[in-house]
Amino acid sequence: MSTVNQSIWFEKGMSFAEYRASMNVNQQELGRVYEQLAFTEEDLAFWKELSARNWKGVVLTADWCGDAALCVPVIQRIAEESNIELRFLIRDENLELMDQYLTNGTARAIPMFIFLDQDGNEACVWGPRSPEVQEMITTARATLPAADAPDFEEKQKQLYRTFKEQITTDPAVWRTVIESVKAKLTA
Image 1 (cartoon, helix red, strand yellow):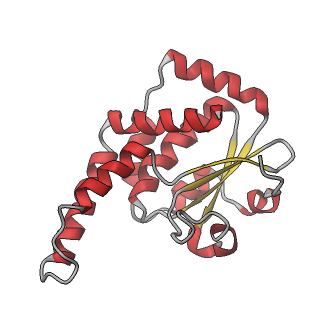
Image 2 (cartoon, one colour; image 1 turned 135 degrees about the horizontal axis):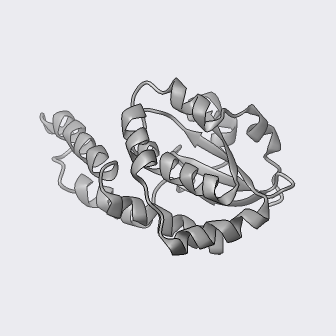
């Protein structure tokens, strides 16, 4: 566990309701996942046990991000069941924090969930995707033509549209996020 205190970032963040109201791009997709997500009895027992930790969290996100349309509502629902208050920060408005949580040391990949203990110290970090979703996008990207191909941009846009539709409508994909978050919170 890190001794990095991130309370100041938590205080700067928006509530889930404020974040959701501010969205312009993926609000419908986020709402669909949030409202249709179902937990198992085992999940609910895990979240109840987690609530004793008295954690809170900071979420780096942006509403244009397809991964956020999947992960934000899943983890918000987990947080609600676990008595964890999440606060949301827009990635590009908070690069000082984002740059502390680069994926592979270089990418400002989002969403990033920074869970804080009761003293505001970093307890663990999850994001931006479950391993299964990462494998899905890696496999899909391998089908794209070369970056200098005339149809690359069109094919890439179509791939991301299809991918976003799949991850925000398939409960089996949502389950991968739930299980990945459980594994991180158990570690």
